[in-house]
Image (cartoon, rainbow, N blue to C red; front, side, top):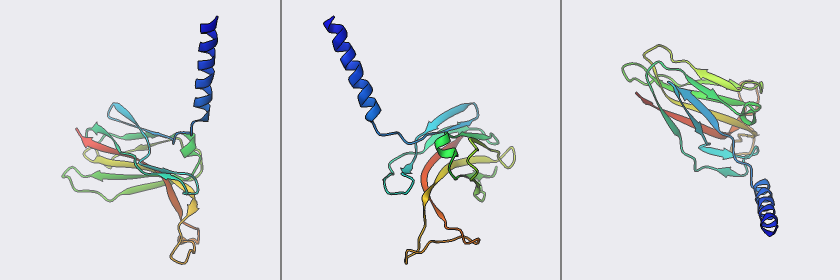
Length: 165
């Protein structure tokens, strides 16, 4: 009977300790050329960018030229404004202009990077989550876009480095 009570108390203590731990930042899953990897953030801040962790590392996968890269996001990212940035290379190794696409409707849980042609090689695919804070100038005035909207600041970054196979 004593062992059962000790085991029950230990299990209860573990449950309490687990319930009190800080939530982990969201992770992004990248898929390409038959393989996948789950990426922790390179950097991640609270929504107002007051508390940040910036010691993450990019993840990597091998892929043949022309292979698409699929991105799967948790709702914690997808329900906020986020964007994807892609750096690719042409068949001769020349870097192509970076491509960027922004999602703001809160419903997009996945995205597929499609190379420009079968010989093009995505090299870096990055997901950025925008926070509730906005950029300010030296006078603490909001920096605005061409429509007069304040520019939101990046809250989290997840990066995939692709090694040509």
